[in-house]
Amino acid sequence: EPEVTQTPSHQVTQMGQEVILRCVPISNHLYFYWYRQILGQKVEFLVSFYNNEISEKSEIFDDQFSVERPDGSNFTLKIRSTKLEDSAMYFCASSSGGQETQYFGPGTRLLVL
Amino acid sequence: AQKVTQAQTEISVVEKEDVTLDCVYETRDTTYYLFWYKQPPSGELVFLIRRNSFDEQNEISGRYSWNFQKSTSSFNFTITASQVVDSAVYFCALRRNSGNTPLVFGKGTRLSVIA
Image (cartoon, rainbow over all chains, first blue to last red; front, side):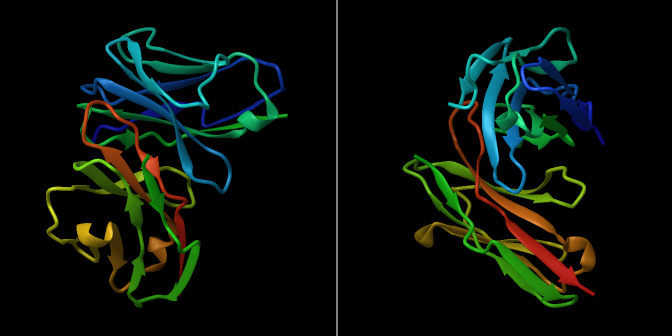
């Protein structure tokens, strides 16, 4: 069964460093999303992406964040200058249509020291 | 604005007991989707069910069943004859039925099934 994959599974970084989180969505999906979950809290929407542009973004997704689909398979989330409060689990999701079910990857656990 | 409330933070049951996880939502939209996701200790989010607001029929899938009541804005999830493998955090989520819209999650209910 096709699934969303994410790399790395864990990343530790120093405050102020740039990180890139990678996702490979399900191959025939066209809509992509990033969510995050601070430890013990609910899952929060960051950004949605379709047709090579951002469809919607939340207040969390400020200028420090960017997304990109550099090729036909990868979907990346970049945090330019990480802060302690960026420590969270980051989930990528994809769907075949804008109103279809979003399937989530296993997540990348980011720890900012 | 949309909001999902899962009032039960943690529930513990003994194996083979039935358990119901509550979900209450708020939305001004007339059409929307409701979801349940499971997050086992390994951390991934596993899709369980999607329900369109047009369809108030209850659904059963094996030991899982869902009760959608639009009149009370609730979408409750029942696990029958719970098993240890059901131990996880369960999230209810809501999404508008228009375009490419994000999921709004509740805070989740942590279910512990004790052998």
